[in-house]
Length: 236
Image (cartoon, rainbow, N blue to C red):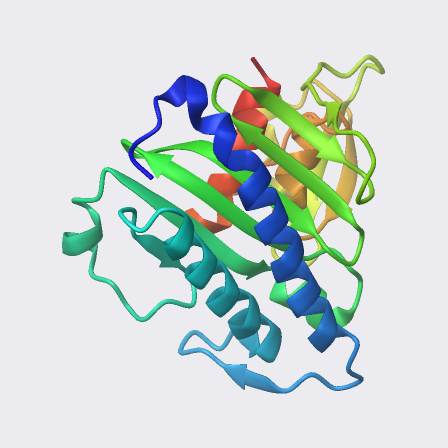
């Protein structure tokens, strides 16, 4: 497949949405086990069989779909920045975002797939398989949510709070960021905190269910790219 003009990038969405669902099914097969086998990465974050099952499926299918575009996954063998900084168009994947939520069995974990072009996400898919909720977007197409497989997608939009307070998404597994809200609000707005795991925090902002997600700690590009595209397109 040759490069698609940005106005046609939506043609890839059905393929990537289907792939995210299949990766989610692979994750759920491990999720159904009582004690998923756990290894640890060098940074001591949990790595399950589900991460790798999703990773291998996504990389194989994306490579077949667009063989000329490289794939960078969180679980890939290390690719130097010097090499990937030269990539103009590539796939950026977190095969299981929210591994801690997976291990806690609260369902708030996702499959994240983004298409990057000129250092910006132009297509994003975020799928929460345990919740059967799909978010997706593409530049020039808009942002959408599907609450169950087979149902019609619903366009989503960001929106201001109408209740006189700021709805702030906070992480279930990391620092909440509550102590950093002063820089955003100046102490002038009362806040309601909305706990959520994984990239679903971005999606709450995208669909107008929250106003702000402050993140001041370190993060990686595969954690944010797909959901960033969804927020941007929901705000247009």
